[in-house]
Length: 260
Image (cartoon, rainbow, N blue to C red; front, side, top):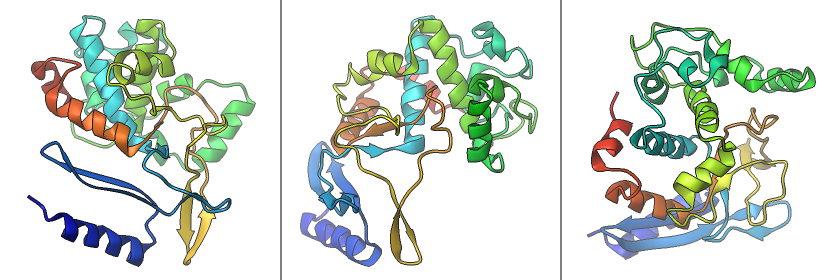
């Protein structure tokens, strides 16, 4: 068992040396060993972080998308060996060898949208022209043949979000809540739309040359399609507990999440 006093000392050292701002909750064998919040949810307004502060969790959101996909697979609404176009005709432009499993496992070969140069400008232009993020994703370059290798790509998970919307008839925020968040009691987790007032959500900060600045929103935030989530450390503990005990899907289905 980790020494709690030593653990507290180490976290305090990190906070002191690196100006850490956020919330920490450490659990071992079901026992909470350490929990504390540091810094400010808004440095500008002097609002301190708490253990219930909501944070943008960026690509941690992929875990929840994967779980929703596994739930729909177990219920027979998705098949991992099917082509995306079988569920969403707008994706008929994709390589015919791509399957849902490729999207989940970062092996589709679809170019990662976050590697597009000047992506923020691209999204602003697309919004101004009343374009569709789905169409934009469907036309991204193919970097390698499906299954040929592994390369991290957010594009595949965005496409999965759109596919699940079509299959369930629910908006992304609603399907995530119905299939994953509500069953786990994760009331403080949801779609992070930065243009909407969300009480308790921390404002992002970044350090430049030793000075804190307000961080910009995610580069895809112009569109409210399948996107990244916000959460709290206490809600993420509920998620970790669920992932280890697999209450939402069978152990066999859960294992598919980790299969490349």
